[in-house]
Image (tube, rainbow, N blue to C red; front, side, top):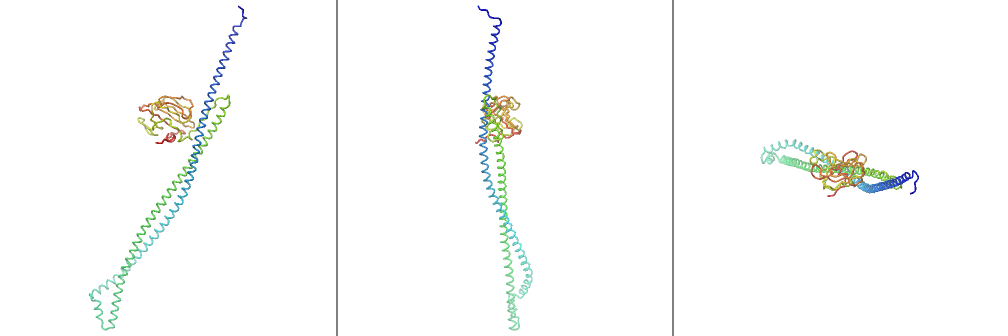
Length: 400
């Protein structure tokens, strides 16, 4: 056996330990690099997904903006037509009022004429009555006796002519008075009928003008609504474009080799109103701000009846702010979407996420459970800018 110099075994052990340490560090470094690579891949996938979602929503909002522009032009044309119609109806109303006033003046004039005739007749009537009385006193043959009572033929001729003239004048006066009064009364009746027609025409013109005013006001209100919606759409497109630029910057940073995983910016939720996917399939059994069975108070969300154990998904990307039991809501998951916006998923039978997890739209957050009421259902609440909103106004519309 060959003798070994002193200290050789210790040096050998240190060498072996050093090699093992180097190997361990290499494995650790490889594992770290692998983990970092996986983290970068996951972040890249998440950023790409969000970028695609933002691009799709921008396209949808742009289409909506184009439709609003077309609708605005159409409404402007309709509004101009209604303005012309309103002016026409106002002119018709003025004309009807003027005609009604003219007919009313004619009716007043006819009434004055009839009253004057009646007064004239009243003045003539005593003299006629006196003459009739005198003639009555003479008897049936009054005129004949008046003629025979004359002394000579000359007086007879004068008497005959006088009696004839008096008789004819009396007949004419009576006939003229009667005919004039009847004619005036007929004219007044016709004018009153025409006055009623003019009043009806004026009323129809007034109603038509009021209807035109209401239609024009409704179109103006619709135009204001379109303007507000167009401005909102433009603002939402701007927000999404900013978010998309941040996502592109994140993707560019992740593409650099050896760089740590960058934080993927969250998409704002406001531009997705009316476009959020439902958290689970089912029927709404408790609407927004309605006291459900046994609740005793109105909740700020809705309840969706669904089979026990059915998957519940996040409606929008964000960070899990709470995941666990919560009194009154069973197992609850709260996802923070930024800008004081949150989505809440209650009555869960099982949780698929934990506090601090980052989730994307459509990601599994839990399973439908059975609440104390006994029927399996999901409680879903949505808060935007710190205020509870009706989720049905934010989820995609369902066609019956």
